[in-house]
Image (tube, rainbow, N blue to C red):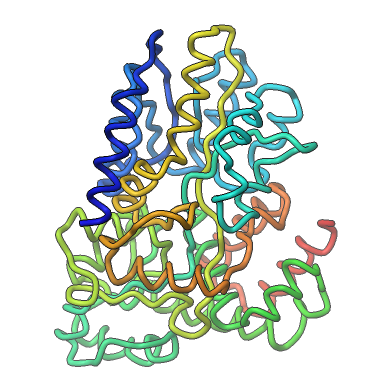
Amino acid sequence: MKACKTILAGASVLALSVSVNAAELEVTHWWTSGGEAAAVAEFAKAFDATGNKWIDGAIAGGGGTARPIMISRITGGDPMAATQFNHGQQARELVEAGLMQDLTEVAERDGWKDFIYPSNLLDSCILDGRIYCVPVNIHSPEWLWLSNAAYEKAGVPVPTNWDEFVASAPKLEAAGIIPLALGNQPWQSNLAFGALQTAIGGLDLWKKVNVEKDMEAAAGPEFAKVFEAAANARKLAEKSTVQDWNQATNLVITGQAGGQIMGDWAQGEFAVAGKVAGEDYTCLPGMGVNEYISTGGDAFYFPKLDDPEKTAAQLELASLMVSKQVQVAFNLKKGSLPIRGDIDLAAANDCMKKGLEILAGGNIIPAGDQVWSPDVVKQTEDLMVEFWKTDMSAEDAQKRWVEIHENDG
């Protein structure tokens, strides 16, 4: 009830803040699955309530497809009014080129530094002391999603950790069930490896390798265990032939696959399908081994426009995206965690509550694209695609991984 009151109160505030000069803003993003579309509709609904108009510019194919299109438009003189990127360095060059709106005044007026948590979310938006983007959620990829129906069919208890999941694979296969669902988009195999880094390697090793950039540790026997786990996962995913991540999630939803390594945005697909956390599916943050989550996610940037009314509307949208009522509505649909810790999420499901507990406990790490350059991230994706689609040995993959990362300062 308290959450409902918060949302209703927020709606009243929005009704009072209708723009005098309405503007139409084209907003580009790559949220096209059922759960994602439901979530982004909350942004659009709130912005339209101000008297402005959200013009949806969804680009199918995920971030790998969408980002080059977005960047090309901005650098080519045909900018949209707002665009999604992930937290990190993806838009740094655009900011350095002077192509993005400075949001510092809005951020200071609304007190973003007082409520955005963890603080590195906002730090990722800062260049030379100025704020250029709006963090809208926290998405962590370190989750294993399991189909309760698949395990019931196979006559196996639902696993509680990664080792139990691997051990359950033979009985799943005997029941005609794919052990691990994995789509063919490059970022999915890279995400799976990143999740295994945290789960198998643990926090101390992760920090040594990814924060301290200790390449001796990266080449060592403890990190080798991560590549061995990835090789096991590769075998479990051999019969997964889908392309998109949400198609892989659907294999879990329908009981055709036992599990999927995927970010918490998978919750949006389970919700659209009417599935209940803890009853129809099980979620294991940190793969049930090391319950840490990375604080990646999505942020919106606002390209500079030669139109004062649209510029004013851009700033209004930026402010709206981090407001309490919109953060509640959006993140409940998206399956992500909010970027502010002062809102009521009593309506959160069991899986979101697990994420909130981990976040509150401070068991968090930066996302990979917050600690490595875009070039290294792309090379790592390419390596992971090759590793997952060929018989490359774990030893060779580890050696290549070190070679890619050792010169990234």
